[in-house]
Image: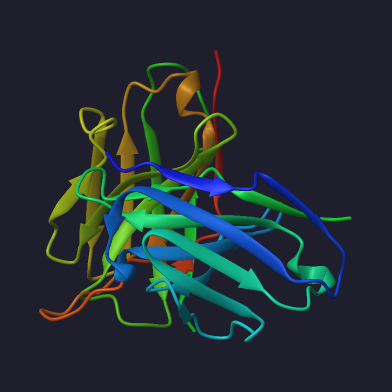
Length: 109
Length: 123
């Protein structure tokens, strides 16, 4: 089974700064297999990025995704107060069909 | 605007059966993979399984022996049954809309989610 490793586990930044979140897979995957989600306390995850780099509907352009193969990155430019949350990457696999990373907590410094 | 509403019992005793349902409104029901995902502090986000509008289901191998999903296309609803629950099944359970794939492309993502149902297993 593919393993997803997100880093860092916690990222402390100030509003206005840029955030870079990493997601590494144990095997090379197609970009169409990779998505990113944001989750705030008490809420369901919200799709941010799919296909590794395609912003979902309604997602601000300060969110961007990049990467290929085994290393993918979510970048958030000019952090807004509402961006401080948990972030998860997700990939498609043969079995089980979907695996999620353990998450990165983006907190206010 | 696609919306998923979910409901079901939130408190179960060990060995009982977890039953949740999810109703979809505001969008097409056909062609998508309708999915259940759960989240616990111990395991994080865990994919439980998916079912298509044709009734074809795929389950997580770790849960396959205890899971049954069903779908009612006349009501735009799908359901999850998980039997013989234990404390390890305590989690927030989400229904979600998975991908609709064409013969040439597929983006594997969950674009819409239900609000979640807290399920607690305790004697």
